[in-house]
Image (cartoon, rainbow, N blue to C red):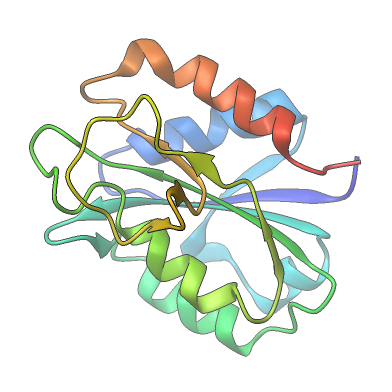
Length: 162
């Protein structure tokens, strides 16, 4: 497997838990975005970036500095996959929208993989949807926790990690 790191921003622990699940399945480490540096990026071939969505589709707080680190880093030759947590029932107009902000920060500088079809999701709108699919793995662990494990497994299987 290519050298991979899972980076997450989590305020309530949901995204951290999901990041740890992904990292465990891959046999790699998960780190808080507050601890991500240019060296973290340089030392890894694949970056799995996760955020929860807050308010009107905003990033988790720690990701604002993380976006700056990504924008300043050399992402040439890097593969990035994005995952996000949201609540489609309470926030159907901004479901997992924060993934869109991460995508916009890296899409011109790295190879972004891991888009997921919107089929099987119930929401009204999301800044994380482009060309009819999410820019990464969207998870609603609040209302659809029964689907989380299978969605993670399918997403991991779709990633070019070898």
